[in-house]
Image (tube, rainbow, N blue to C red; front, side):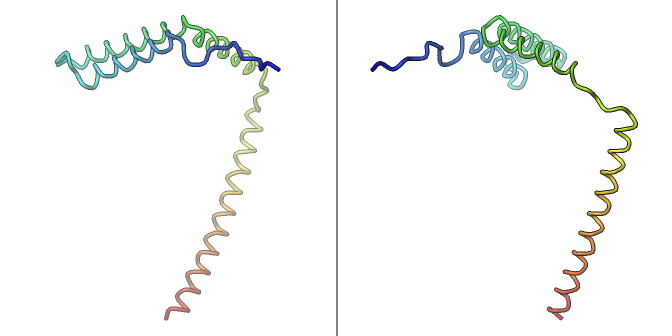
Length: 123
């Protein structure tokens, strides 16, 4: 019996690898300063240009297109979310603050008790 082999390529596309190389190169120029740039403005401009070029190269590849598709679907799903009203948020925040205060007082009492017990045993 023959096993079916997945025809999907393993590894990354050339665009993904090239975008990573561009990104690393722009970071290296910014931090290592091989061009002996004295102005921070030029270094930042080179870094931003490298980031933009790396992003464009990545988006033009198959992984980039699937990433853009994922982001569009995420935006659609976020529109479906029912966000709490201001009143619900205020009530929930108030309940959490009260719960934190109660737990902190309980832990303070337990800590004071154990401190008292340790002092009682050591003195």
